[in-house]
Image (cartoon, rainbow, N blue to C red):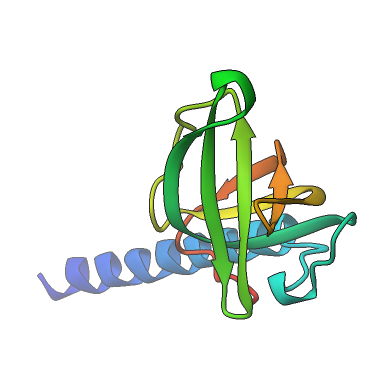
Length: 128
C-alpha cells in the first residue's frame, strides 16, 4: 500500500510542477511589453494588464451599445470600451486581461477603444 501512495504523491508533485511551469511560461509570453496603468498617457499605443473591476453596457453615439469595463492593476485603472458589444465571452468581474490599443479620452477618462485583448488564467501572476 505504501508503494502506491508514494508513487501517487510523486506523480501528483510532478504534474503540479509541470502545470506551474506552463503557467509561468504563458505569463512571460502574454505579459511581455506590459506597462503599469499609471504610466499610460493620452494618444499612446499601450499594452497593459489587470483585473476587471467593473462592467457596464452604455449607449454610445446614436444608440450604439458598448461594453465598458474598468481594468485595474496596483498602480491605477483605465476604462476599456468595446463598441457594438453587450458582452465579451469569458470576461466577468475579476477576469485577468491584457489589452493593447491606442489611448484616448472619453467623458474625461483615459480610455482604450476596441483594443486587442487576451484572457489570462488566474494562476498567471500580474506584474503590477
